[in-house]
Amino acid sequence: MAKLFEQITFCNITIPNRTMIAPMCMYSAKDGVANDFHLVHLGKFALGGWGLVMVEATAVEPRGRITHGDLGLWSNSQIAPLARIASFIKEHGAVPAIQLAHAGRKASVQRPWEGDGPLTDAQFNVGETPWDVVAPSAIAFDEGWLRPAELSIEELQQITESFRSAVRRALDAGFEIIEMHAAHGYLLNSFLSPLTNLRTDQYGGSREARFRFPLEVADAMRQEWPSHLPMFVRLSAVDYVQDGVTIEDTVEFSKKLKEIGVDLVDCSSGGISPKGIPPRAYGFQVPFAESVRKNANVPTAAVGLITRPEQAEKILVDGQADLIAIAREALADPFWPLHARTTLAEKGSDRFEGWPTQYQVWLSKRQRVLRVLDAPDSARELSAAS
Image (cartoon, rainbow, N blue to C red; front, side, top):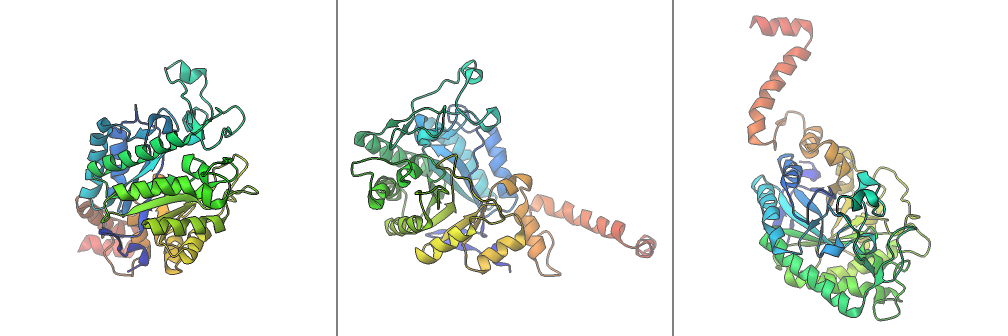
């Protein structure tokens, strides 16, 4: 069996294979509530053979949304629609997971297809007005963006409690893995980076001080989340900006996360500044996952332009990561794991192993027809005669 299709267990949860749907914001909620779009969007990945299906960044308070279309878990009214999704994912063989997040200074902006920048009259005219944004320091993300208010220590405690409450709701909704979002320039990531954290109190300055608030949030989440269920953390391993976060910083932070009881570090990168542009290449973030895995001695997920089954398999075989997280390639092919199983399978194996039972009989019949149609003329004549 290909390593990509080996099971892996974290705490008491066994993921049926090493494929993971990375959290992808769809900006399609209203008042933070999931709807039928989210059910179909996420449910199809469970049918597509993915081992773990992660719900997109889900805000722990209203001002923690990126856009007006973000999902949320700040209210009990948001539990039931997410529970429907978690139940469907689990029923069809995948592990349901959810990423909990706070957008910080990158909040209160347009959806990507509206411009992906500060809100304008086009949004105001449909009632989508801006809200106050917050950050470790009062530094706007870019020119024209809202200038955030610097968070007080009391407010930091309140945000920690918002994460804790969202964890309880995620458990009530039936999710089996939670992930803390500390990447891409959002609130927790902006505490980690010296580019955005200019505080002079116990939460800023030295590397250890910049670690403090994200570690407090991680610890609160881990305490609230049952010990038999896994917790992941997504990090931006590097900022791609001079004097920003380095891979050495991320390794040290990952060691602290492991001490708290975090089970896996999901290694992404960038997002702290519009000047920090990742050098795009196939698997460009895989070395970060490898470095954290080897130097912090914690399991990792690799993500970023992983497109081919052979590429994913090599990452696992070479010991660079423990899970393969895929996002945009999954949008192009929701059945990527099932196609990958065929690509990596030994000759003579069942072509439709792992496909939904409802699909297998029809695909098998179709395959037999295609074999005849694609055969040389002499073989087709023989088949017709028989």
